[in-house]
Length: 584
Image (cartoon, rainbow, N blue to C red):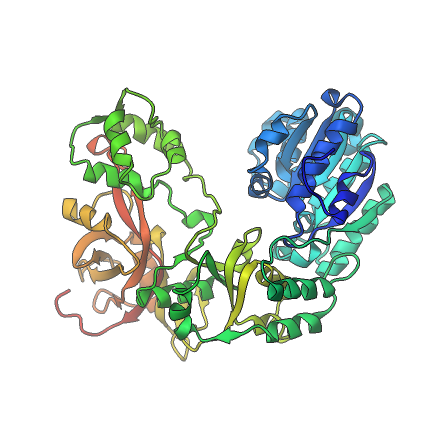
């Protein structure tokens, strides 16, 4: 008997025979995680000799797997049956390496998937003999040759191997990842999903089950909205009623962007403002930060800090120039560091329960092995701006959607716009509002690989995008005074720019916070500015200030015994002008 309290639709999934095959349409807030863990528990108790079998759990991404099982890891570890958690790509890599050990370094993921499919066809029974059940999560985001790989896996699996696919085609917002190949031409979401179901049905007898509960919405209004969302989908789960979604979004109460701060301040819990694109999110972030509003923005992983800010803060605030420090010193000081995470410290070789001496050189060597600090999509308790894509899988007490009408307007919407609206609406737990389009949010274009806001005639930019990758991280600038300013960065902080030297081949800008020099822009950024503005040393452009999203630590491994230092993380659009150059 399951230790979970399941509703009728969840029981229909968890209590089926281990050899059954089914597609489970699991909409937002319907209790999918509880259902999948209850299913694993049932498999453990019903599969003959569970210690000799395994359940293969496959998902779109490693982060999706972590999100699904982070709270139930101990229960899963207690099962006799083995649960092998994989992404499609990692499973394909293991299969290919079984026959071609050196191919693990090949960067072509699509080719690797196809090779793995070939080896399944040739050696399938040798690879799948111990699998008693396959669970596929977030299947709506698995497409193209990866779907063909999964179908081949089920063809080669033992006859009594069951299959449970958890999916919500109405949340299929990654169709831009599809590539046209011999397996998959570009299809609409509903066509692609039906083709997948049809192919699975040709391999095994498939039953479609819908989870019907609702465990996210916390008031009657949102429960009604979630109910209307479900009415917009077909029996196969995809969205087939644009008018229902259009009517739903038109009834969402709307506010102006300029009135946002007063309302948000009075709300309790987590709040997210969701946009359809990064350019909108960045401009709204900049507008709100310029008003002094404490708001964070969810960034793509390559813009997340490589090293945590607390490392540089410790280096400057500990006020010690020695090559080492004691664990006891750091343990006491870490309590004063607001952004400190013990997990990050362990990844750098810093153990809080140790009594040993720690050397900056050793920490810098460990830091050199890190690609970036592990990026966790955690739920902020404050105010967050995010694209709809980045919000998938998360939920918030209060949700605001920027210009939802654009997602149902035929002339504006993309192939996955309806699904994006579905995802955005379904993130809310308590409150749902629309934000009316603002004239302050301008059209953004890409030129020479850089986002710009163009002038009216689009001959040259009036603003240029800048982020932390445009700041030099190989050297400390501004000395100790600059470092101390960086330890005090907050929502009101802005990074301003002053030309270093008018006679440079490309414009280089000193970066200031509160009139204190803290950083320098890169030569690559200067080359981009020169090319975009078609300027010369006689008229290098001036740049306006941008918000500082925070700080991060950097290390020059050849200087100062690898001692870390802080660098700012600007984020926004810097205005461009060619006047008032005196003093630069």
